[in-house]
Image (cartoon, rainbow, N blue to C red; front, top):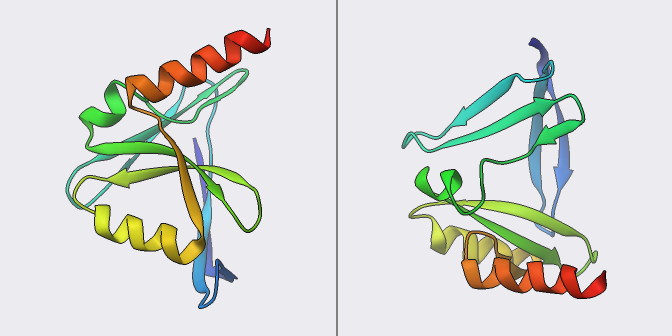
Length: 128
């Protein structure tokens, strides 16, 4: 693993008005089969694993991720038409809902919900 810090961080504006300033603090280069874990102040965690072919971008959506008190959502920014996966920390529902409203984001699916996952799976099967 190689960590490169940006000091000072690169700062840039994002989002719907009023925009917020993000700080790009650096980068982490992983070798295949290395993992990095992000922790919240409440000890929730989020892992990313580098593989030879790419990345496991999240722990299992309907297994380990919920056990870490994180709920995954597939969302769409209705202004740009772009899709994202957002991860909601347990207990921060109101902040998340306000953020989605301000950014004009619609929840497409709860990616830890078996009904939503089954609908996605069935939709993919019918396209083949």
